[in-house]
Structure formats: structure tokens, C-alpha cells
Image (cartoon, rainbow over all chains, first blue to last red; front, top):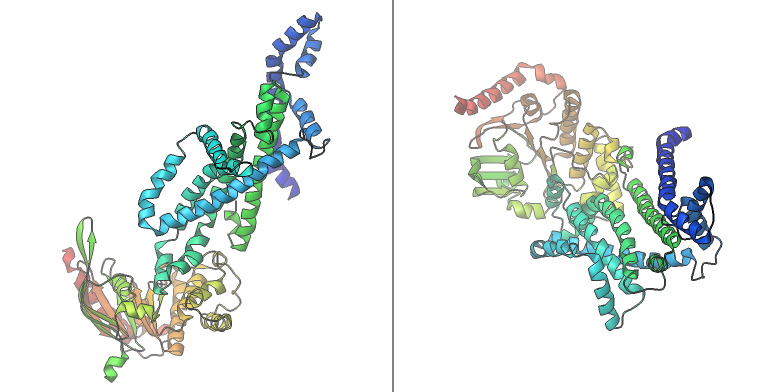
Length: 297
Length: 263
């Protein structure tokens, strides 16, 4: 059983990872070589090719940092640093994460409420959906600064404006998924409710909502990942001093590629953890709702 | 007056026309029928003869466009609001996220029975359809026949006197079907319910019914109403008696007559 999962699930992932890392070192060598050569010339050093090789992998400001450089940087800024430090990536990740979670919560609630309205109200069905779709055609990079400036002008600053950008992105998949989910009951299941003379509230809680749960989780997985992106984007235009977005920005100001890449990796890790958390919740809910095991994802 | 009281379903010159994109489709026309309390009435005919439409009209799932239809002496809508009938669909239509007992509890929850009353009724109806012991199972853990029995239990749970069944065993194999037919007859004898049963199987209709309504399509209408002469007590091998075969023959003739449009 154990070796089986190792063979079918762990090994393929590890194999791909090894290939990626190998390609990465090759790419780092080619990209950083010229920088290393320039640096050596500047210092008047005469390097053998193996020394040049080593130098390409250990530059302070490489074009492409190597995985080990990023790993060391992440280790130094997380495990070896107090979380309260302004240089700690844990601190920055938490700043971004809190905005993400708040925005995700508001976005999910908004999305569900809109979907309930669209499904139950003909006028909302006809009028709202085009606007919902239009909202996502506007680039978030254009909306984010305006939203933050406007909110600042009316005295709202800090966590909420960033969270609202997450909301703006994450409500969309929830609306689309939930409209589909709430409409997913079969005619026969609805007819059954009709024969019981059930009212709309009963039909919603006993049929539409439970039927929509698989759709909800699919939407939440997308929603939570783009919530994180929303929070990071929200940190960029404001010159925020904290958060993963701020780390990315300051890293690019000072050419600190290693810092950029480690912030990038931490945000990727965070996104993965968030999606995993939604997936784990889904598995628990599936078990409670008696989903057939092979149908479980 | 006594006669009026015992009439459960009464159709007078009933017609139902669907408005479709291809123009009106006459699903039912000129249907006259009386179903008395305690009857077991089968509706048989080829697809398109309106047998399901008629059942759905009784259940207020479709509205008749002509004539008059009374259920328990009231309009179908009022009968539905009084929860006068339990409906068993072609598919079990169990809610997959509910256990079997919770599925049976569904109408009880909607109708506001107390938790204690719900428990008592779940236990009683599950016993009635021989499903005791499967309370905590989810629908996918049961066979098709068991699922359909659970859906019958669900229709029985709130004590409606009228049971409307739309080809409930149509998707099951013949062995399971025989077995369920027998159980249905037992259940009918024990509960004294009125049952309207849609089927496309001649032996099934003859075996189960006190009254067989033969229907034909285009437009959907009743071609023959046969009062069964078989006794109420019916072992499976009654199906080989001459009496049974004679009724089956008459049903077949009625069906063939309805098909004359094919020529």
C-alpha cells in the first residue's frame, strides 16, 4: 500500500522536480556567466572555467539565482529570523495571508449571495450576469491602485483595501460555480419537492445547497489562489512596506533577484497550502455527505 | 354521497395539450375515469400515450387544459397542498448526500413532524419495504431494487392514502421486479392504500391491478378499462391461470386496437 503510493504518486512528482532543477542549473549557468565574466574582469581576476562555473552559481545579484541560493535565503529569512522582524518572510507572508483570507471570505460570501439572487430572481438573472463577467475583463492592475486611492480618500486603509482586491477577484468563480451548482438538481428531484409542497427556503436548504457543494469547492480552489494574487497585486501599487508584494517590489528596486525569487517561492508555497487546505476541507465534507469513494477527488 | 366519498380520482372529459415550439401537442384527450378508494389501477400503453402525463396531472405536476380532474374531491393543487399522495418516480430520486433514513425523513422534515415521530415513521416504513438494517447506508451502497424500495418507503412515510407510481420498476431486471411486485401487493393489502401505477408491462399490469386502464397514443386517450376478475390474494403462479391469460389477452387486444394508426 505504502510502496504503491510511493510508486504511483510520489515518484512521478520527484522525477519531474529533478528534471526541473537540473534544467534550472543549466539555465543559471548560461544566464549568469556573462555577469560573472564582467565581474571577474572588473576585479582583474583570471578564472579557470571551473572557477567561472562556481562563480556563476554564487553571484550576489545573479540574473537567475540557483535553487540552493533561494533555499538558503528562504531558510535565513524564515527559520533563522524572529517572525516579528521586518525582514522575516514569515512576517511578510502573514501580512499577505491575512489580507488574502479576509478577501477570500468576503468574496465567497458575496459570490454565494449573488448566486442565490441570480437563481431565485429573474430580474437579477437577466441583469447581473453580464456585469459580473464584465467586472473580470478589467485588468486588476488597473483597478487596484484606483480602489486603494479611493478607499484611502474616504479613510479606509490598511488591511481592508487589499482584501477588497482579493474579493474582487475571488467572488467571480464562486458566482459562476454556485449559479451552476444551485441549478444542478435534476427535474425529478425538484418535482419531488413540489409533491411535498415544499417552500423555496426548504428547497434551497434541503436540495439546491447540498447539490451545489461540489461546485462550491471547485470554485473555492480557484478563488483562494487568485485571492492570494489579489492581495499581492494590492501591495504593489501602494508602495506597501509589508507583505510578499512589498518584498517583490523592493527586491526589484534594488536588483535583489534572490529576494524576489524567495518571495515568489513563498507565495507559491502559500498558494499551494491554501488550495490544499480547501481540498482537505472538501474531503472531510465529502465523507460527511457520503460521496462514493471513487468519486472523491 | 357515499359514492362520492369513496372516489379518490375522478376525471371527466380530461384533456391536456402541451404548447411546444413545434406547435401544440395533444398529450391527453377525452379521458373519463373513476378511481375508488382501495383500488389498484394500472395505466398501460406505448410511450406517448399520456399515461405518465395523466399521473403527473393527478399529482399537480402538470395542469389539465380541458375537462375536470378531482383528487379526493378537491382540485389536484389543493390535494397536493394537503399532501394527499405519495409519488414514486421512474428513478429512485434519492438525494445522494442523505442516508436512507434521512431520505425517508425528507418529506417528514418538510411537513414538520417532530424528531421522535420521524424516527417512529422511518422505522415503520423501512420495515414495511424490508429495508430494516440499512438506515445508515448511503444510496450508492444499495442495489437499484433496494433504492426503489427506499423511495417507496419515502412515499409511504407521511401516510398519504394515495400512492402514485410512475414505472417504478421499469429499470429493474425481471427477477427483482417479480419480487418487488409481490412485495407491493403485500404492502397494498396491509395498508389499504389506493394505488395508481404506470407500466408498460402487460404481466405486471394484470398481476397487480384491480383495474387496468389501456391507453393509446396520438392523441393520448383511454381505449379500454378492464375490471380484473382475479382475487385479491395473488401468488406469483396465478400468472399461468387461464383467467390471468384471458385478461392479458384483452389488454393486448386493447393495445393493438390503439395501434391502428400505424397502418
